[in-house]
Length: 345
Image 1: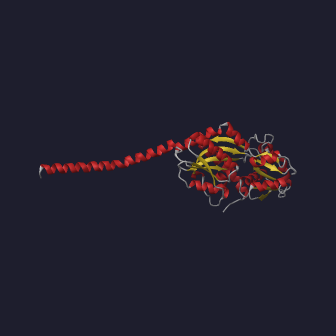
Image 2: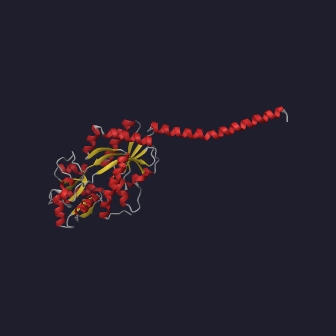
Image 3: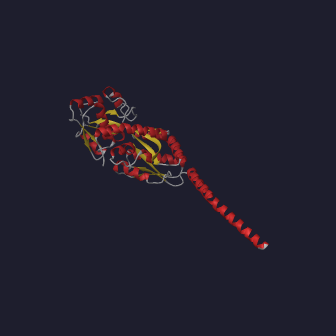
């Protein structure tokens, strides 16, 4: 073999070895590039418009909180945050829809007691579990009050319980429908006080409240946002706040816990709440951004006042605190669901 042929063969071998080395190195380079893209996406969040999904109609309490939050997040993080209402199935439709989106922080959910705790307990086939979500932050505690027709023969929760015990099954209460919060709040009260009060479900809390005002049904639990004006005008009377603290919206109304401490209602708390969620596996950097921004928003005086006007208390909890709180809420509402016997196939 000539020296020229040997040199040519050596050159080809070196070229082949170099080519293999480049090919082997390529996946490392590509993987590194992917990681950099993810890191850049998290750093630049939000790079695209962000949707906050609400499972209830526009104008309701949850929608009010979502719009305040969207406005605050946009001011804190830049970009665009918009609220999208997807009512249906008591909020379950919105929750399941959000879970089908990528965990990129571009689709969020303002969930509630009904969607995150009560729905999984009610459905025979659970639509989702807490582990399907990334909890971000607790946003607000929503006031609920026990109201009665002005002519009802009781003026506080102790008198109500005594009246019901003397007339088992003869007293009725209204709710916005089977399995909703104001239905199960009364079932929890009945369970704790060993009373029998008959449930009259309506298609929504608004018509139920109208019949309490009209005297067709004597009492119900309702949101302070809806019933507060009726209480102040004297169209219904307030028997007690269903939370552990009196509320600025109704400063003269005691809590059911303090008024009913001697009749099985100590620590009675069926106040609603709303919290921010994403699909599971949300990147930690985006979670941290959203969580920190939410904490700042809920500390602002105008947001506190805006929530208070809707009968709610702006209340921040981080992801870990929200997870623990949700577990405690599940235990509490399990008692009410079991006592009521309510189930959705």
